[in-house]
Image (tube, rainbow, N blue to C red):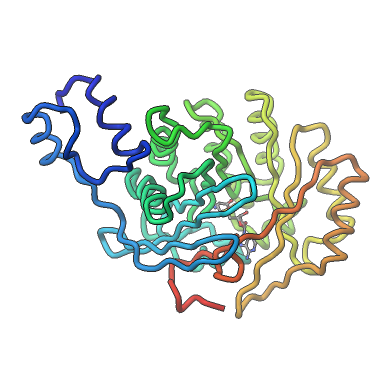
Length: 324
Ligand code: SAH
């Protein structure tokens, strides 16, 4: 806007700092600058149309300026709060087990629509997040530039000041995007939705496998972990009788080999009309033990918000008619 860069240091903390101001009023700026800000920028957030709350998570439904809706989730962990944001309206990845993919992608979210989910959630809840999960609706690496600018805002020291190690981006395995992220200004934690150890099985669950086979995904993951000296998360959703055998676990261990990665097992959250079921608890533990036996690090993701359909794979931006 032709303003001095130092003015940003007055404005940014007001907008994204403790106050989360929704007006420029009261900022120590001259009248001309204030006028220019007021006429050139807006504070419009996505409109909050619904909040569902539970002990472990609150789900927010937002209406965007063009009427599209997306969801964000405030996740209440014992160690602090995270906000999970959506990056697209709908998703084109078509994973067989995920309800978000049933809405075809309408468009990418803008930077302000992503930041708006965080600001809106923080304002409404009174909670400033300690971390961000880029794991809501959409494939973040398909909206790369906007997601990166969004991360820039979240990490800016005079705003939310969230460390890049407290931000996790989950991808279904868009290989060029993984290489690009490694070279970017914000190499956040990387989680990859793997969900199966062979191309044959993964291809049935995740069509993206035809574009980027597992060998290429694992190659990109290895590159990321080595370049950044970072541990990669491999997400693995437990589907009863589909991908949960000990053989699958052994194959998965073989893929990981010496790579600095661990497996995060996710309970499958089924909806009313799901064709899949979650593996029984004993099977999940069997799978877990097999991975351990092969020397693979493994954790179980605590499911948050499943009572309000706010858990992994349950975001559909349909609001309350989406209730189980
Ligand atoms: N598109 C990105 C971001 C979504 S993250 C990605 O695919 O990684 C959401 C995570 O939840 C992904 O690992 C996804 O595979 C998983 N998921 C999808 N449906 C699920 C369900 N019904 N139960 C549990 N996890 C699910």
